[in-house]
Image 1 (cartoon, one colour):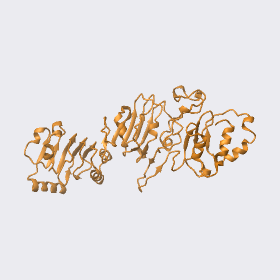
Image 2 (cartoon, one colour):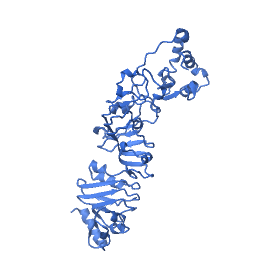
Image 3 (cartoon, one colour):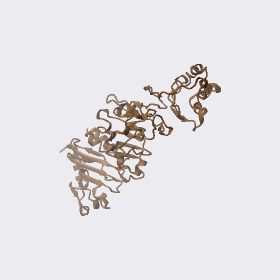
Image 4 (cartoon, helix red, strand yellow):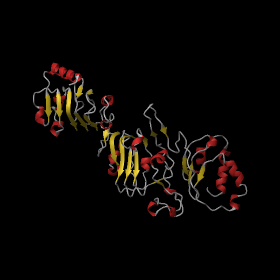
Length: 433
C-alpha cells in the first residue's frame, strides 16, 4: 500500500470514522447509513437518477470502480483529493451539467482504465495533466475528452460546438451542423454516397495521437470529397497514416485542390478530374459529372473556397509548429505547381487579331504573367501577378462585375486607367469579351 493511499485512508478515518467500502449497484444501496470513503459505483439507471446519489458519494476519497453516466450532477465530490489505486476503473460519460471533478491522484498509470467523454461543461485539464505526469498510455489519454467537449452522438445537443471522438459521415445527422471543431476522426466508409456530406460549421479537425484524422475507404460510387478538403487539419503524428483514402474507384481531385499540400501528401493514389480534356481520355466510369464530350461547361468548374487547409507537423524535439498553406492561399501566395496542359484551339483569323498582337502581348507580359483564359468559357483564374507584387488568387466571370471589375481586383488602383487598357484591348480583339 502506497504512502499516499495510507494518508488518504487515515484522513478519512479521522474525519468520518473507519474506512468504509461502499458497493452501489442499485437504489437500495443508497439508503444505508454508511459514510463511504471507498467506492465501487455502477451505472444502474435508478442509481444515476436518484436524488440521494451525491450525498452518498461526496465524501469518498478512493475510487476503485466508478461509473457515472447520464446524471444531472454538477459535481461529484467534496473531498480535497481522490485516489485512483492500482486496477481502478473510471467511466464518466454524458453528464450534461457536470462542471467539476475532484483532484485525482493516479497510483499506477499502467494499470488503470479510464474514459471521460461527452461532458460538455466539464474542465478536464487537471485530469489530463495528472495522466500525462504519471505517464498514462496514449489510449488512455485519447479516452479523456478535451475540456468542454461533447461526444459524437445523434442527435447532438444544440449547445455543442466542440466534439471529441469519431464522426461517421455515412451516418450523417442534421444536428452535426453545429460542430465547429472536432478532436478525433472523420470517417466515410462502405457507403453508396456520390459526394461527402458537408458539416456546415465545421472548420477544424485535430488529430488524436495514434489515430487517423480522416478515413475515406470502400465507397464504390463516391466521386468527390470537396467538403472534406476545405477543412483545416491539425496533424500531430504523421507516422500513423493520419489520412487514409483508399478503394474509392470513382473518386478524383478537382482543379481547385490538385496542387494543394493536402492532395500532394495524402492523395497520391487518387486521379485528377479531367476538366478541360476530351472524355475519351477518361474511363467511362470516371467521367466528371456534367462534362460534355470535348469541352468544358462553366457549370462544371467547382466554386473555389478560400478557406485554407492547414497541416501542422510538429517534430517531437524541439517543440515547433509548421504551418503549411494550400495552393492559392491569400496570405502566403500559391506554391509552385506544374503547368496545366492546354487544349489545342484553332488560331483566329489574322484579320481579327490584327498585325500588332505580338506588340500588345509584350506589353501585357508584366500585367498578367500567369493568367490563363479558358476559351469558350466565361471563367477566368488568376493565380499570381509577381510583377505587380500581388499574391491574390481570384476566380471571377463576366456575369460577376465584368472584365473591368475583374481587372480592378488584381491591378493596383493607381490614377492611370491605362493600367488595364492593354489587356482589355487584347481580349476584345480576340473575341473573348
